[in-house]
Amino acid sequence: MKLGKYSMGIGDRFAHQGKAQLAALFLARRQGINITPVWNKSYREHTIIGTSPDTVRSEADAAVKKLLWDGPYFVDADHINLNTVDCFLESSDFFTLDVADSIGQAPDPVELDAFVRSCENYVGEIKIEGINESLQVSLEDVRRIGNKFLPAVQEAGKIYRHIADRKGEGNFITEVSVDESNEPQNPMELLFILCALAHEGISIQTIAPKFTGRFNKGVDYVGNVKQFTKEFNEDIAVIRFAVEQFGLPTDLKLSVHSGSDKFSLYGPIHNALRRFDAGVHLKTAGTTWLEELIGLASVGGDGLAIAKDIYEQALGRYEELCGPYSTVIDIDQNKLPTAGQVREWNGDGFTLTLRHNPTCEKYNLHFRQMLHLSYKIAAEMGQRFTGALEKHEAVIAEYVTENLFERHIQPIFLGQI
Ligand SMILES: [Zn+2]
Image (tube, rainbow, N blue to C red; front, side):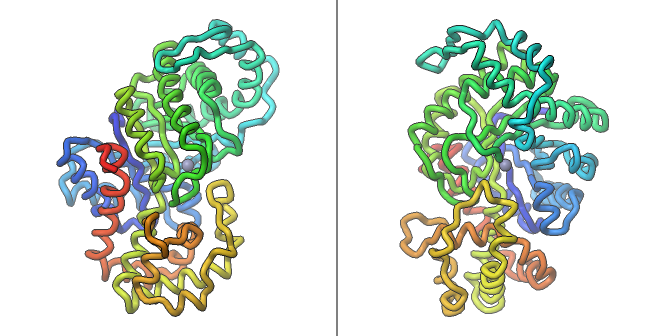
């Protein structure tokens, strides 16, 4: 199965925006860029919302059928592990093997030795096309990297073989993710992680490293853009090299998680893709749900009341909602508007504070992140929330499409900033 050069993870927590999301990819196509849609929903999201993976498959199939999308599309079992993969086997054809938790576990010493020996050819000075300075790799580097990452790679192998047993090799796309780990992986680490993945026999098509800097949910990048740009370019170069050297799938590419709204990186990412003629997978999950909230707030009345209600309840359940996302959010509670303040707002007050428009002085990234995490409360509202999504579908759909196309596809894939 081929994912295609460009692809986007378009998560949709409440499974109501499939068509509006797909509409954005049609707009891209009209400008000459084919992007493969991948509906992703993690085990975590399913658990929090109380849905099962087959609902994502139904949504994707329905949107594709309705809009006559004739390109490839996939359904991603996002961030799964051996304990959680089984309920996705039937409905998914894309699996994101999350092995971040195994990073740093002690490897078997014999297996570590074998790994280090297998990498001996890459000790010394390595010249990689596209990287200015050659990498200086010592045996200690390889051992240190193996020590840190080998168990995670072996875990990925176990999950991969488990899926391949059920679905048959070649019948699904494999991504390996280590983005929700504590420390970023540098290009040299990526090189030897790929080497180990190749030894595991994993037919990997996308890899999601943790990049330098903070990739908080739904807000802009926080970190050193210059450093990110250097590493992103080097990562692409390393992947090229690894594909050649280790016999990995030729379409292997980077996957950028929490990729939504990283506006300050989109220019550098676009330039890197052009420079190397490389592909990318960009995951944007939760921002569609934020556009739903913006749509609801903008219509006023019942919609605005729901949006305010969600925020007010979220404030009272701060710890509970933030817990599962601690590595991918940075909320300063002192900068959150109070429930009393929000109660006074009209639709504009709510949408301008929430919408990610960096030039708007009302925009509040703490408020935005808080709501990003608050979808559990909308899920608990059940029909009150989904009924409102249906009632205000036309307004919401426009926001969803515009957000994906203008704020994400245009800058990254079309270079229109
Ligand atoms: Zn992720």
